[in-house]
Image (cartoon, rainbow, N blue to C red):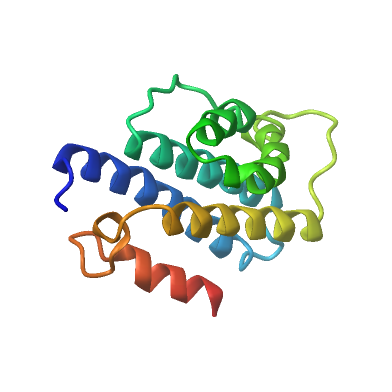
Length: 154
C-alpha cells in the first residue's frame, strides 16, 4: 500500500534527526574527557524526535515541546504497548534543559550517560518496529537508517 508521501517525508525527517542525535551522543563518548552533558542532551532529543515521528506518522498533532511524558502519552493513545518504553524514556526529559546553563548541578556520570543512550536507542528501535517498511527501509531514499544504526552498535 502506498502512503501519503508528505507523511512519509515528515516521518523520515523526524527519524533522521533522531538518528543524528544518537550518532552525536555516541561520538561524544570519544572525546577525552567524554562530553557527558552533551550526550544526555542528545539522548533526550533523540527520544523526543522518535516520539514525534510516531505521532506524525499516525496523523496526530503535537505542540512544540520537549516534554517526553506529554509526547509519550500521546503515543500511548495510539499504541498502549509502548507503556514500558515511555516510562523508561520520561526521565530523559530533564536533559533537554538541565545542563544547558551554568550552575551548581553535578555533571551526569558515565554510567548515567550510557544508560540514557541505551534508552534512546531502545526508543528508536521500538518506533522503527512500529512503522512500515516504506519509512524505515534501508532501500528507501533515506539510506541513513541501516548504515548508521549498525555503525553505532560496533
